[in-house]
Length: 113
Image (cartoon, rainbow, N blue to C red; front, side, top):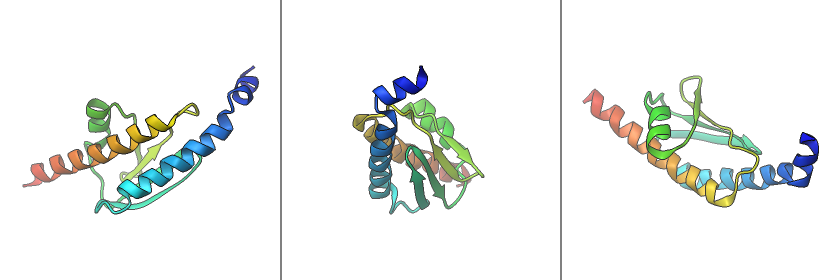
């Protein structure tokens, strides 16, 4: 059953471990970013609140960096990675998000100039 697989593969424990790792890495890398207000989360449910909406962020994250992100309330990035996430993928998410944020912000500023 699904419950058996979750238990056999220790997916709940992995979610807690990788979620803590992801939250820590995001805070270290994005915490001082001028566009980031707050990084919060529990397990693998993480939210990154931005100072302002960045319209092309989800498209750039997906097309250029292979990240499927969701933005709620216009300026909160919602991350919901899979329970089987590993350390290498945590780093890929962090670096991809940083690059996506910078790229989308640059394009937004470029358009308004």
